[in-house]
Image (cartoon, rainbow, N blue to C red; front, top):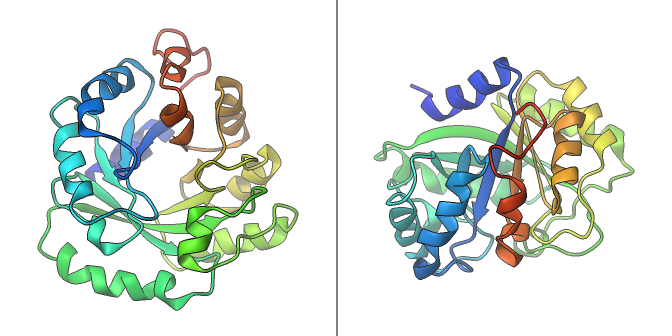
Length: 248
């Protein structure tokens, strides 16, 4: 039963949009979780993503356990490595970095993860992960040793997303990277969305309500925000359920 993906698809069917709050286990102290999650619960957030490019073993599971004490939102792993897999979460984005050509991140780590996933109750969501250039080197670029696709290479971005769909991915994730200088341009989101028939996730560099709304209007089905909340969790105040005017 694809519970978490069904949740995403049902919201899309109702012309609604999703927002995932991304929490990096390497940056979030357990003592900060209650206050942070309380703010997330009061916001329009629909999912909690947990993961990072470089995370010490054990931190992810401890964080997930703490988060689930304070929220009913689905907690989905967004792992940078197999050591971040824990069955304490609800689901996992089973990522393949299809914008890069490093076989370890295309299929190698995925193969290594199978033994863990085969004994877990996690909902596994195959996701084509596309790294887009944002103006600076990101942790994903450094760790994966792959180059992002330039924003001006629109046809390559569109073709890569479509290839992911044809390969059987259930989601496409356009990622500018943590702390991106530039968010992914709305016209790129729009062009990719028009070219695929599966849900589109967009993340990286979104720091304001207007940028979030622009991503939705362009066609993003789910937007991921992490750094903006890490830097200033009062951003949640702008995204309280009763305040946001767009139809999400």
